[in-house]
Length: 389
Image (cartoon, rainbow, N blue to C red):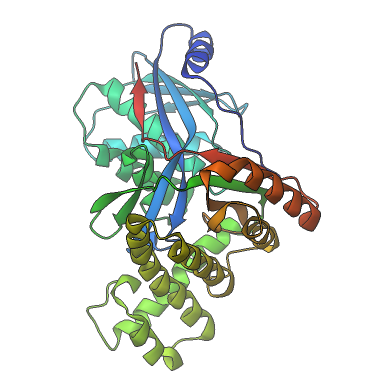
């Protein structure tokens, strides 16, 4: 499946387009996509992650309407949806995420009102940049704000995860919705997915974030995601026989896992090993960012990618080729695949003065190796969701 990175839009242009579509003045909200620097598939194992928001957004324009109906349209998709806030249930299409968010907000006690919504997005579907969370948080913020009632930003996070679990059928963790809500400009965010404690991690001045889009997404991604979660749960169940207090792979050390290797199937052991070692890599990477230690970050990112390729088996030929192309390019500091896997994007740390040279060399090498055209963007670490006044 081919995918592309849409061009950024100005808020003024979005507001004008939305006002024309909805027939009057609108309130405008947005939420960013994200790139995960390190900590892949650890979130639903209640571990540690280190994401940052990118300057690609999903915009949600909204107008209140009388009654209990939500009417939704999109610039990217032809389908329109009309939903009753009194009878929310899973539906087909992109509106399913909004239905799930509305249901999740109401389940937390927010009293929502009818609304007309128009959505447009710069975050590509299927690229591993969390387009679904950006949609959930932007529309959730719009609905919560229109209600006029006070709300906690964590309401948005929980409603977004509810949409994934109960409506989309993806048993995801909380990372994507959390970073789309709480991100701060210039920073990554280290999140403990067990207790939701978090800290901002400033990105050193000596590196820029560069996202390399492979241009492909293999269709097995969705089913394999839930399968990986199941395999981790099997590992926890077996390890818990010896130590009942284990609640997730977060509670398991590598030495302990190795000691029980014979009790696990080879596949389950490898899945667990990725999670256990990836959690440690996140902690080590936070220290390396604080120290500006790019040599250590290079090793950690490389080890993370190798673990995802060999132990978790979520990489693919195109991602491996993109990582190799980037490693040989001028200005490269560290890089790895990012997101759920089986295609999408890689994330790279690049010397700021060599970003243009890096982009050119990486794109040329990837095209020669894969026959595909890469889309490569430099992005600041952006801020989280907001209403645009």
